[in-house]
Image (cartoon, rainbow, N blue to C red; front, side, top):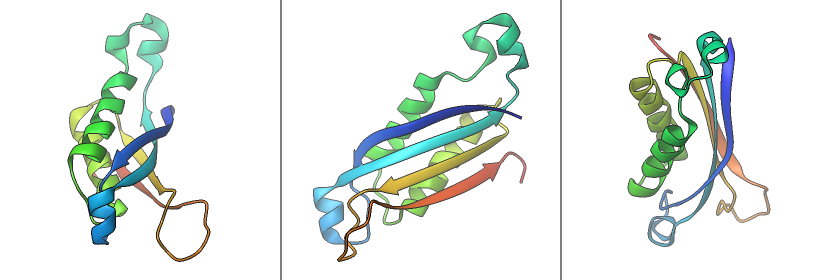
Length: 121
């Protein structure tokens, strides 16, 4: 299966369990992998035969910045379901949400979740 990959979408959101996270906000990094058939786009060289990266980026930015989630699992799930609902060509999507400044009382590069969703499953 072919893939479109968008890595390192950097957003500022107000997600988290603690009140401080919800009030102060923080950075989140989101990676997307979408499985779809790209044969037609490869032959036609036309945007209408694929998925527009800008539309995916804008959807992720809207979900990440306009809504508040307690859990990054909920953010990732909402993004995945919105992509499947809004883009018929996408058969499967993998969403990874990374939280670089996780308040766990220790030093970590990030905490994150990765979810996979498929059309019709």
